[in-house]
Each structure stands twice: as C-alpha cells, then as structure tokens.
Image 1: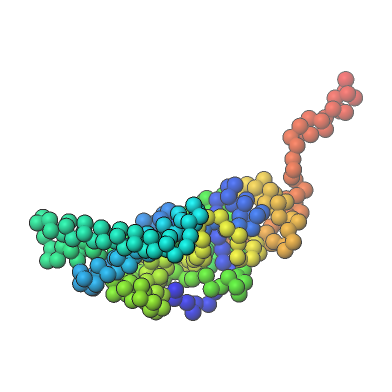
Image 2 (image 1 turned 120 degrees about the vertical axis):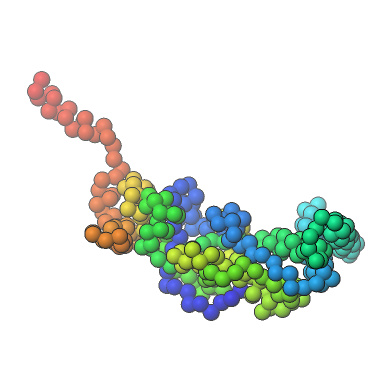
Length: 316
C-alpha cells in the first residue's frame, strides 16, 4: 500500500466504555473489524472502471474465481486432512470448472435484449469483477486518530464524552502495517490496474490496495485517520499502550476501575481527562489526579449510617 507518511508519535483510539474496551486495555488486545461493518457504506467499496474489453475482463474474472475457489477448497481439504498431488490436482480442476460455469452464465445473461448498453457482456463482467475484487480483501482494520482534542471524534466514537480515548506508540516492527487514510477524489479503480495486480505488478497492487482500503469521502477529513491492517477479530496488540484519556462525562467509577485495573501493569500507563477551555469550544488534555480518585473509591454507602451509631447511643 502507499506509504511514506510520517507516523505520529501517538495514535489514538476513541471508544465507548464496554467489556470489549476493558479487554482491549487489560488484555492488551485490539479488535480488527470487518470493513463491511463500517458506518460509511461507501468506505472500502470502490467502483470498478471498466477500461478493459470483455475478453480481458473474462481473464481477470477467471483468475479471481480460481483463486477464491482454490483457497476455499484447500481450507476444506486441510480440515478433513486430505493432502497430496491428487488433492491439489482435484482442487485445480474444480476451481477452473467453477470459473467456466460462471462465465457461461454471464455470457448467457448478456444476451438479454432488455440491456440498453453497447456491450452488455462488458458491463456484466465489470460488475462481477468488482464483486470478486472486494471478496478478496479478507483483512481486518483498526482505525486510529491523530488527536485527542477533536470534539467530533469524542461525540461520534467516544460515546459523547462518556467513553475513553486510548493512546498508543508505534514500535518499528508494527509500522509496516499502518497506513494513513486519504480523503476526497473519486471511488474508481481501473480494471487494468486490477489485471496488472493479478499479474504480479507491485505498483498496481499498491494502487488497488489504496483504492479499496485507504480512501474516504472528504467529509471525513476531520478524523485524520490511520489504519492498522491485520487478521480479522480480536488480536494481540502490536502497538504499545501508553495512555488513557477519559471524556468529560466519563463516570468517576469508570475512571477508578480502569486505573485500578492497570495499576500493576509491567509498563506503566499515564492517565488523563478532557476538560473544556472556559469560554471556548476547545478541549484540553489534563493529567488525572489518581490519588484523589482512589481516596474516594471504593465507596460503601452504609458507612454513613454506621458513623452515627455512637451518637445515637449517647443521646439515648
């Protein structure tokens, strides 16, 4: 993917407080989300520009289908412990047969007289290639921001300031999987670039990867997003947890729980809270007074009544 951008000293993950957030903090995990679950349906969904003819699009489509079916059947064969040259040959035959069946169906559908385009076969193949292209991307994404003091980020991703913002540093061995998101432009990716990618062209691969994974609408520019790419699901964090910032509305009990949960961590974590800059719409990150917090919690309410027991006995 396109690189070269200087990674900030800290990257931040805004989150509502939840069981998953606690797992992220205490177990040092990160959740790599399926891009199809993102709140913007246009995110990670580029459109294919069919700058190739039907014959070349067929070749691209066949390659995609053969790769997908081969991977699916190889996984199934591994699960049932089938292996050896005959298994490999069988998988190859089945993948080719499936691709040929799909091509035959597409060619037949293209003969429908209701299509009012110059080349229905090219249009249909473009749609199927676009679908297969997106199916090939099975990686997960963790999104980060550059700033802790963005009001929109706190409102949209920090549970309206009731959540937290988690700060990470980036070790050298994790930097290769971290990429900066670009904003604006169009959503098109050329079919010719996809074909070149399938033929092993690394520059074409970077172009396609960027179009699929690292391009968003200009309206999202305020996020200043970076994306960590990895295997989907809950994974060990390759980043280094450095700080936790609590939102303005975050409950004191939540702050206490997080502070106590991390107090014996081998690498200490610093704690902050967001405050308003009086008379402005700006936010400021301030150090959290953990001593004051721990002096009040854990609290036992009935202690208030017990404090009057002696007084009551004297008066009686």
